[in-house]
Image 1 (cartoon, rainbow, N blue to C red):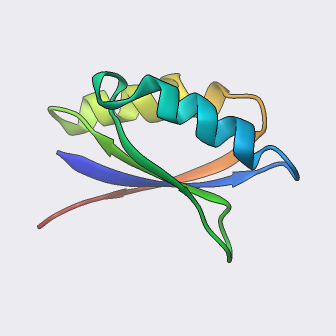
Image 2 (cartoon, rainbow, N blue to C red):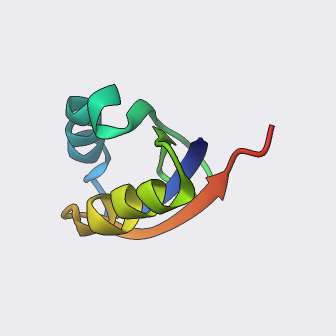
Length: 78
């Protein structure tokens, strides 16, 4: 299962957050990370076996990173 995690981060924290997420790689559930312009600052593509595992990655890891203020998780349906 795949999901997109949209993050709002503190000013200037985007490069460090991207680097940290990329270091987790596919083994840590992170397929891709990009800085974006608009309402959000960073988007990560997360993959896991089921929604619960995605929740563990988002709520248990991503939301605890220094500089991550908010997340929105969009589950892929197709």
